Image (cartoon, rainbow, N blue to C red; front, side, top):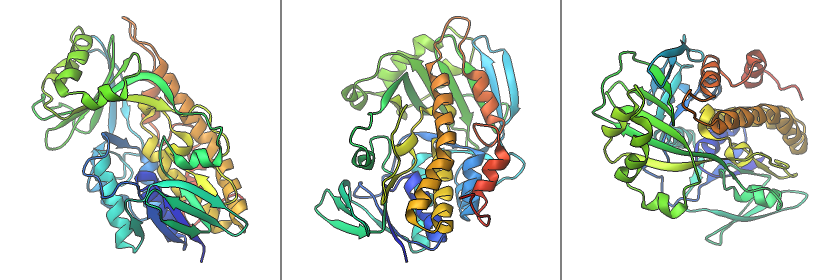
Length: 393
């Protein structure tokens, strides 16, 4: 049986483990953190294409039970006037609807499902080096331990170690030009449109929010500006971030400022980054997936869903191809055009500069939310994801 090691136990790594296990491979996940994190990052919207990918792995239902559904998107301007309103994704089936949930909740569900299926997960194992030869690859971890496998998969995120091992000349991550704020407001006004994600094209910031069934408002704001230093992010407080946001939001006739005021201590700031140009994704025995290979800025909201697509297509490629080499070549050829498009679309949305009359990106967000994926050709995507069908190798 082909043995596979996955470096990274986040969304992409855990979903890949589920897919590879279903395809009949021996898979072990090695995660850098010593224990499962209680809070990993901010909330996310899992799009219909991500839910469809999970359905191929019999994992859509447990995720759907954690997140709350989003079935419509509404776009307004800085005066509060409605610009557009439309359904989100494949909203008819409860298991393919967009879902809003904490990243930590999603990881916890995927981790529990992996353990239930007997997949091994090792914590405190940060990948630091790897050496491949004709018969396999040896991974070395920060604690001095090593493991031998037929294939090493790097699902180790934006700052991937394996990406640099595959291509020492790989370009570093790029600041995408916006600061991103995430918060949760328990006392904000209740939404009149349950299940709707509200996008506000503000005069100085892009703002989006959704209200959960328990009344908590999940919100984000994207603000154009210089990159925040890491030490400033680490030392930042809710009051510090509110002081930056409120002067930008208060001039507009929208709920954004009131939502931020109603937010307690659950408010974080980060920088939007992407990978504009990544060289080879693989060698003969090593491969990067998810954000390690094709990180986009968060504007399209497709990061987790793209990683889930990766997992299904990769497992099918390894299942259907005659050799690992052929599988990795086919996988990269099938995935690159789609992920490149997502990076470009997200960069267009992130790079749009606010002006008093508004800024671009809102219509594109609305168009993307109305379909299961960030591009046309949904039938082609569904054929690729369909588990029983063979890939066009």
